[in-house]
Every structure is written in C-alpha cells, then in structure tokens.
Length: 386
Image (cartoon, rainbow, N blue to C red; front, side, top):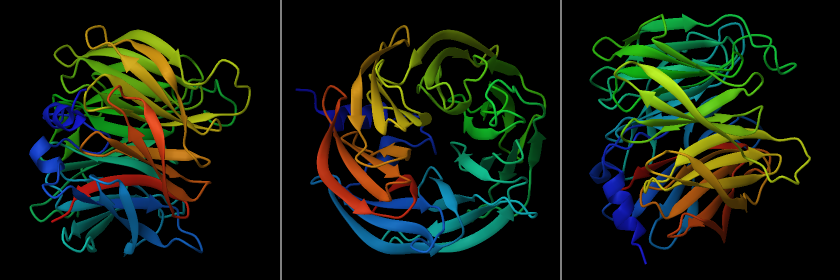
C-alpha cells in the first residue's frame, strides 16, 4: 500500500495550492497537529474567523472558538511561512470591500490584526500570496476588478499596488454575466504571471507579476476563453506549471489547459462534466484542488452537494471521472486538503457545518462521521501548530 504521508510530503515541494506555495517542511507539522482557520459570512451565530483544532493522526476536530472578529471573511490564505493570515472581507457597500492582515500565534491560534486596506473594489471573494510572501492579490467579484498590493516586512498590507478593471460581460448566462465578475487570482508556478479568473467574461487572463513592488501589468500576456456561459470560478495548477485546471461554476464543468509560461500561452485540452449523468437539479460548481500526489483532482458541487473525484494522467494532464462523495451538508463552498494528504475538510455554507472526509491511497473519499457546527462556513486553511 502506498504511504500517502510520504507521497504528499515529497509532492508538496513546490506545490502551488489555492492559497499559497509552501514546501513540505513548512506545511507538515512535526506534532501532527494543526489549526484550521474557517472563514464565514457574518450573521447572528458567526462573527468572523473561527478556530478549529485538528489532529492529523486521529482525525479529531475540536472547535476552539473565535480567532478574530471581522466582517464577512469569506476567503482566507496565509504567507508561505505561516506567520500571517489574510482575509478577504466580502462587502458590497459604497466603500467596497477590504483585505485584513493578521499575525498568527502558532501556540494559541489567536490572530492579531496588523492592517486592513481597501480591496480596490466591491465584494472581494478570493486572494492569494506569491511564493516569496511579498505580494498579495485579490479578486473583487462585485466590481469585476483585480488588485495587487505589496506586503511589508512585518506582514502588513498598507498601500495599493495595481488595480485592473475588467469590462463587458459574456451575457451567455442570464443574470450572472451582465458584466465582469472577478472570481479568483493565482500566481502561476513560475511566479511570473498572475492567472486571473473572470466568471462574467468566461475568461482566464495572465498578467505579469512584479513582486518587488507588488504590481501587475495591466495588459494580459495571454487569455484563455471558456465555452460561452461556462463561468470560470477557480483554478489550480500542477507544481511543474504544465497544466491548469479551471472549475466552471455555471457550466458545471472543468477545463484542462496546457500552460506554457515561456511564451506565454494557454492550450485547451479537455472539458469534462462535474455531475452524474442522471442528475437533473440545479447545481453550481465552487472549489477545485489537486491532491499532493498529483493523481487525483477534486471539485465541489453545490446542489448535488458532492465532491467529484477525477483520476489524472500525469503525462497528458487529462481527467477521467472516478466518482462522487457526499459532502454531508448543503452548499459546499470550499474545501481544503490537509498537509499530509490524508484528509479533506469541507465548509458547507448552507449546511452550517465543517465536515471531515478521509482520502484513501487511491485518492477516493470516504466519510468519517466527524463534523462541527460552524454557521456559514465557507473557507478552511490549515496552519501547523507549535
């Protein structure tokens, strides 16, 4: 039987995840214990970033309370060394949204606010940090803009870098594509380009990064166009940078691209469905992630309320459907694979719970019966405990 802990630790070297790039030494806890920070929508029962204790040896979850009170911290990420945590505060008022920076206390799990800064748009829903921890980038869904900002030596974000305002709208999906809707931005594995995902325009654009001053080029160096009405939402890349996988929220599909940063150029290879053939209900795709082994890819379905599992051919990059696993709650907005590659936690936004699944040696998922009640749980991030 394959030892997934060893496979995951090796494969994690250079892995570009949804939130960050980090080496195995940085991600894998020596004690096997982690903090899980859970982003939520603010309501009567949730006031900010929730804290969970997690034991990767036993799979035990324990709610440890509120790590920081803040409004609508719906997406979280860390710096590569796990010293700082960043939250996208998804707000749509006249002043727009914010990005809040925190210092992490690895012993207690508590968060100390370092800065908050305007996200340069409305409804920030995703953010990411480059591999050096010098630059933060954010996608503003409401205004259809992407922004970058430098991170100072103390982890704070205090001044803007670049704002890129998309225009137009594909208009192929009624009510969701009348204008641009920025939904994700990711440093590519070469750390030369930011891959910016626009649901409203059915596109993924590559903007050149300048991490020295926290800026982006304002003209895309390459653009991938999805099928009209697909609605690209999030993406993930292979560590070698050869393949990019894009989750299409509206079309309930995944697009596979070959990515060549040296040109730069996207080449479309495959489109594959996320739903069973006999499912006839309404569904919206959300998160996407590659297992550290590189052999399995996962996508969350909201409506079918499942995680779809694909097998991935490492040479061609192509996907084949392996099955679906229930998320044991409604509206799986986000999920995260733990640093050992043995567990997956899922935030069910409408189900108001955080659910733990087991990842088998073959990449398949199975229930553990373990979950926590966390109202409007929408994002989860693992941080090693001391």
